[in-house]
Image 1 (cartoon, one colour):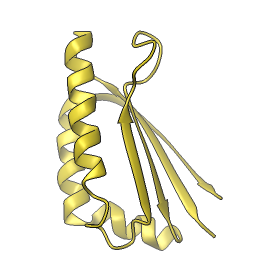
Image 2 (cartoon, one colour):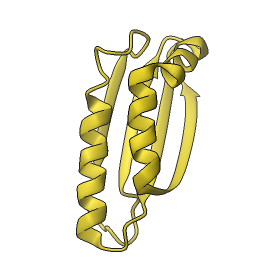
Image 3 (cartoon, helix red, strand yellow):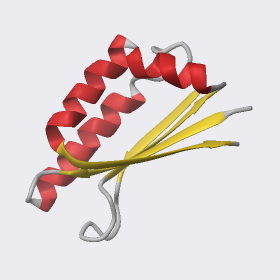
Image 4 (cartoon, one colour):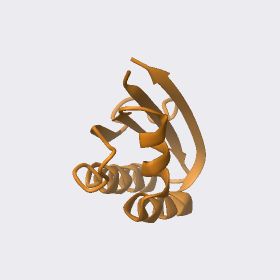
Length: 100
């Protein structure tokens, strides 16, 4: 089994350029987790490029071997550091976890 963790964020900034910049920086930090968190099998994060008034600003897709791998990722210090940063710039978060 592979567990796919999909998360989307809306940035809190009122200005569209600020939202885009915040999303790009968050994506950069998330993508840097690849190779740092041992249970993270694949990571892809990116800022939205179309329909900024309608679409969410940032998405990440991360794969793990199992729920235990996701749990270990959630408490890894590198992830916690990135999550704390995102917490300062996001307005909303939605997530879905699926088996693939």
